[in-house]
Image 1 (cartoon, rainbow, N blue to C red):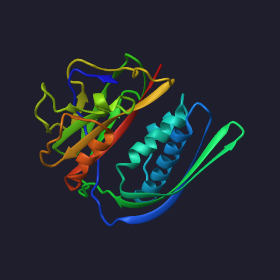
Image 2 (cartoon, rainbow, N blue to C red):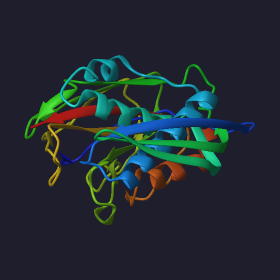
Image 3 (spheres, one colour):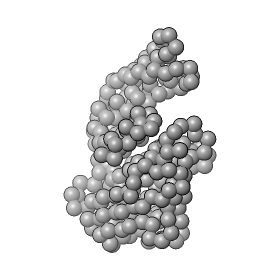
Amino acid sequence: MLRILFFIIIIFFSYPSLAEIVTVESTYEHTEELSPKDGCKMAKQRAELKAREKVGGKTISLEELEMCSEIDGQSNCERNRIFFSQFNAEITNLDVLETKKSIDGNIYICNVKIKANVTPLYQITDPKFNFNVNFNNYTFKSGEEIKIEILLSKPMYLNIFQVLPYRDPKNYQAIKLFPNEIEKNSYIKASTINLPRNGKYEIYFPEKVNKQSVDEYLVFVASKEKLNFLDKYTTKEDLKNAYIKSLNKMKVKSKPYRIIK
């Protein structure tokens, strides 16, 4: 979790075109630490990821690739790919065609085959409307500071969200960081912004998580006109659905950062 005094940032996103029907399957193997039901849930999520990447393509950033080799890297990387794929393509209809379960020694195996209606999502096409975001680091220990540098090609409206995948949805998994009660103006004219302007942003490991490391995200929404979002969304999917309504008016980027114990 990121504890913040006040905040600012940006991101890229898209707008749908013609949908495509695809059939894909995926397998998930696990031990008794995970239930067969949860194993099949992971297999289904992997199949959905394949469907989105097949239609919408995929983009893995340099910092994400570097993070893959660290503690719990493969698990976190898979979560990242599933999260980022939702910004490239939307599944509007899905049928589970087949689910196969088997056991090989102490390894449980689940294979799920799905048929999905997938729509690619496209960002604003103006090449002069752009921005970039850099962190002072991409791996943090609990209590360390994160500093953000934002480079803008031109003035724009900004909305920034923090996504907390490990948080109980009852406490909201997506929280708007900017604009906020202190900095209410979302229109940014400066070509470079360093955040926080005052105070500091501190990173904290989420509670009740039995892992050595976790990934969280900052999501940046840039638009040419002022857009209204809620201050909180129950899940990251709810936040994404809020984007889809105005995709042709914005660009969205998400950046992960890792917290280690």
